Image (cartoon, rainbow, N blue to C red):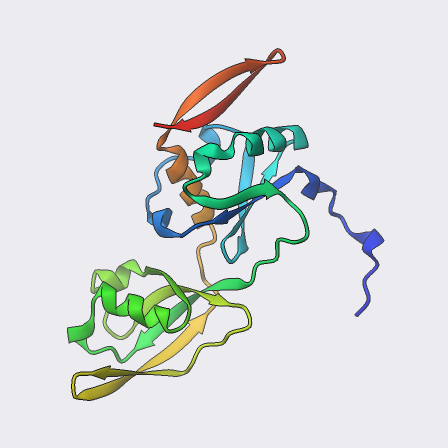
Length: 205
């Protein structure tokens, strides 16, 4: 396939910034609206650990990047968008079928996820033991990697097999915005008057 680059509609990317998450751990701690604090922007999940912020102007984006220190403990990198940001992994819900009840705990499911990639979280239904026909985990898996149909688990002098099935959907892609809501719910608003315009940004308490 050949594509004429002159047909690209990429002007909006000049107002975008990209952040690379250090980890997904705060995803479940969400309370407040993202846009009720700080800058005016929307956030979108790109895949892997990449978050895209779309600002109203490149000036506001640049101001955000210069004052990004309040996000440094959550993101390993925050910068202007460029074509080098190419996610190399995807989030997949993995169903684990055939797990003996005596092994039904969070630590066990996290270890199963690590056989496939990086365990992001164990589904709440699984943690609360609301069903036992399958356990479900969210795993970050490299794009070029598939998952096995079966995992053999050695336990003491015996072993058992877990059937594995996965689907890239449905994954709740609103979680990056929820993560940022959680971050911004733990910050303090600071108002700055600069060049006759009121700006506000956030500082960690």
